[in-house]
Length: 167
Image 1 (spheres, rainbow, N blue to C red):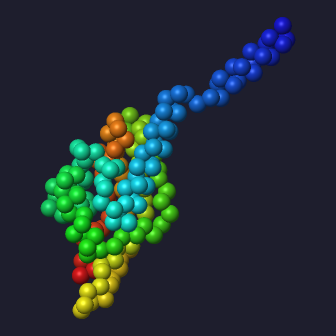
Image 2: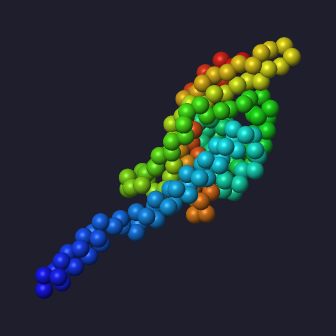
Image 3: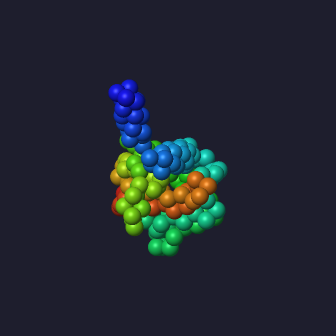
């Protein structure tokens, strides 16, 4: 009887110490979404225009992509990026440390991704000007569609002052 109780206690302890399956699913989703964000940021820094990480229904907030105040679609992002890259280079100067986001209604971790970082943006030299750079502190958040593609991106930072200082 003592052996049976001991085995039962060990078994219950092992089961109790395991993370719930739902938490494992959220962690796996978050990990996959982190890889998507890393790829998108690497492509941005390396001026690779595949946009494979983005959903066809992508929406970028007006905080950085579109100074008119409207949101930006994937087509608009694809159209504007080559011109931006022709004028500027960007490099993430801080270690990329991705953080889990939460659902604003439930306050539960939901697989979304956030990060804080400092980007160095350099305006390319011309025949008559030298290259100039500015460091921009950024907070960015990413939400994903069911296929793990970036559906919604918000980027916060003082873009106006930063880009004015480059001119």
